Image (cartoon, rainbow, N blue to C red; front, side, top):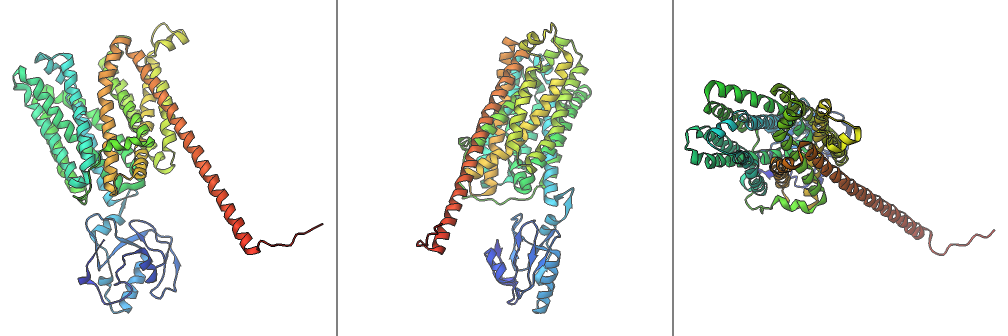
Length: 558
């Protein structure tokens, strides 16, 4: 917090330099808080009056305090306390405008939309728009790009590598952004990443006329540019969400994950329609233009963040030394292995096993997307409010592993139940359960990584800590997104889709059991520490009693 002495009023209880919370008490304010919180008590200038407050606090900026953009260090006072301050200022000869004035920055903290402050609401809208446009970019060219690539004489392996270049580049972007977030500035990274992604999208749309010998390499270059830009933007955006929302960050991310399913549904439909109307270039041109519009909207919505050049860069991978972060990273990896594997190989399985039409395959994928999208805000709220995120994550991983083994179902289940043919209804039910459980696995991972970052203290700056968490999360997402279609596809070619799903389910079950053992160990350690504290407290009471009573006490004989 900076102080501007040039605008300070005449000496009064409010014109003193309050560089420590105790200074407020010396001026007669018994319980002042900083930021958007409640004020329970206040006193007059003589320190004698006290009054219970049950109303929400109202942020006011004192005239001698100069707060920078989004410092979060404005003084919060209740409405009645503000009146007391104005009255006190008028009694001391100071005008009310000098004493208490609501600034624009404070009004952003006070006004609420659906339970969120105006700054939080703006950041939430920016995250939703960024998520929707990213999901649209993922699916908009999926219906027609393999056909165009095949006309360019590309093999299936080359086409798969073009798709995999996006998450591969994302690993670099997430690590780079997580390390240098505070040095460069979160807002700048978000806007720059969106610009890179939009530019790569437009360039990819121009490659239809390129020579065949260069088409593959140019497509890979454009996908790399898109992957770096998107991963950088999301890494910085998640860090901003953690900073602005605090304990409600997972609820906000869950809501955005739910709404971004709109992009996953609209993207393929829009891409196929635009391609049939205007050819190869039109879908990419429309998506690039929409990305630029979202960029300018986010530039207006996202608050500025402080840049600190002197902060040391730390690799987010260091968080893996903490078991909370290590398990969370593994949960994220296995979750996106499931998502990318089903997205890549699920359609062929449904066609060969049940002979489903393209419409029914779309319904299958829609069930998967909707159950995931509907479950994320629920599990995000549970992880935020109930403080049981690790337990929810473990339970959902266990049941998700069972559902994955039933997705085919696997041969072991076929022999167990005596089924001669695969059950179509079981596949639809299982994919719904898998989508729901993935929401419960993914949402609590953010909170677990934040616990690791605060415990290890790799960065003192709060935004830098959130940058490390976001960087590790996006790195884990990219690894899972790469492994799903590549490793999963390789295993599926040997064992089949059903048995590969069962193998992934077995991995999920094993991970859930390991996390259960970790939780049991933490619970035992907590109980031992509690018992030690209780015994030390009793020992302290006995020592104090002996000091009071003295050591030489007369014995009482019957």
